[in-house]
Length: 333
Image 1 (cartoon, rainbow, N blue to C red):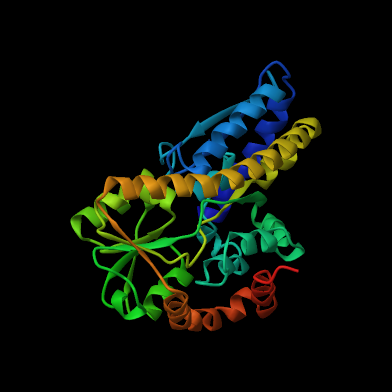
Image 2 (image 1 turned 30 degrees about the horizontal axis):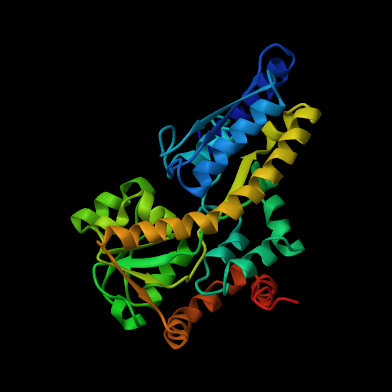
């Protein structure tokens, strides 16, 4: 039995179970929220706030179970678990969606967005919002974008100019764009699960990585990397997603209240992300184990020029108009 048939059968069972389950008003609807990072990160805090508000505002109707730190499913299993209904809400990195919607690869293009304000403008635009509903034919409904922060390069040597990355092995997510990003720098990308990153860096299986400060600190990456370059070269954002059949099968009043809660939590998560990154950056500085390198505008532009061919390589998959819309977001009206 192939995976597609398995998913169809599981979805039928899921929908049937929902219909039966929702008919018993005395039993709360259990919503399993699984993620791969620590509770202290923006995503972790968002998941806990969602649980708190959902159970407060829908008492007896909804019970939210949060599973952090890959305690239920890891990077490689969580999407399949969502599609068959074993979990109900995820917040995967945007890099995880290339097999479901090629256009979402836009967010992995390096040095595309100048800052978080530009990213916000794009995500709130019609083009950005359209990506949330672009996978419903595959059983995935996007509920919002959650920030984690801009990515920084870390390594066991100083990375000041693009040629400094040559020959290094960088841990990457399972993303074709991120593969090409490091190949453009003549470095060697190595796909590795998030939970395995610390050990990989500690043992030398990989020499470097890219993460926001919150992930660097929460996963103790600064303890096994001597240098961090504040490159702000990409975004590590998440799309909050749910199983489309599960979501559409919820009682309307419950779905509407959860939609309002998610909108509120999204604002809070995104407001906290910058503060948490600054806090964790300072904690890394205070630890004294890692030197932070700050690029000059000229150095940053040299990095951008080095990886710009990646934009062209993925233009047909992402769409030239979508890339142009993203670039336009760098210019506030």
